[in-house]
Image (tube, rainbow, N blue to C red; front, side, top):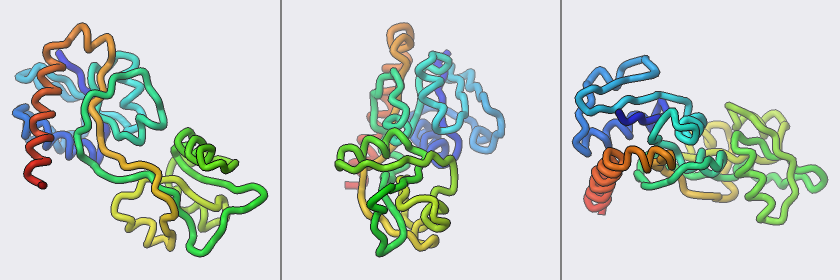
Length: 212
């Protein structure tokens, strides 16, 4: 049986749709279930539903053979896994944002984010020395309450930034969801994994052609 780790939320919905388009028969109740482990015996697949940041951990440690994870998570976590396919779903980008018409503090600039490794690397590459403040949620609050000069966060439509009076200053990287594979599983379960990659790649390519 192939075990696939998937994040709950938006990526899950889009990934399920992609799997169905690729010919995998997933039951209708699959979408509504609150279970954390879902088994589809007819496809010989088991799904583990996890928090986005945990998917890479499950795949790296082999409790999941395959995972679907955002590129933002892969950049932050740097897990020992194979990234085999860009699924082209859940498109967004990582950006630096803050209050309009404000400059970074010259003496002790602070950046709040849930991506401390990505943020540290980015500002280092810009030749800027900043203090990183690691937050887990409501990153937009940081500039509003004076905790940080800037934030590094995911931007999808930009609506959340706008509603909180923030603006985007710098674009760091485009983000989509990726198919990742445990290196040992790739050797031991190469046939079902290759089939999954092949079927998904075909669907992704067809989707790209339709959008063109």
